Length: 128
Image 1 (cartoon, rainbow, N blue to C red):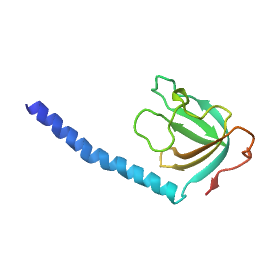
Image 2 (image 1 turned 30 degrees about the horizontal axis):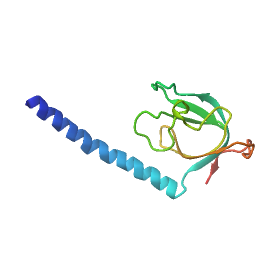
Image 3 (image 1 turned 90 degrees about the horizontal axis):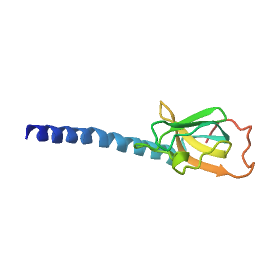
């Protein structure tokens, strides 16, 4: 009985702390996108290191020397669909990414892909 009560109390505490944190992250991310307070980078995907289908590792790549890494395991805001699970990002693909840095990594807010040389590969990181 005490073990069940302790487990229920712990679960309730985790929810009280965890859910508000997740909601704050969501609304902060949404505000950055809505107010267009993000950066934009365009160019080919380079240094692509895919996440294996089994997971357990982040997928990473660069676009014009800007680094990105994500995993589709676990909660995350922004684009995080790994190529091994049907994601769009592939080596050499021409992309335009709208993103922001959350203090530890770059979060992709919007991904545009191009099948032709539409993107200026000499582009630098621009403030939108």
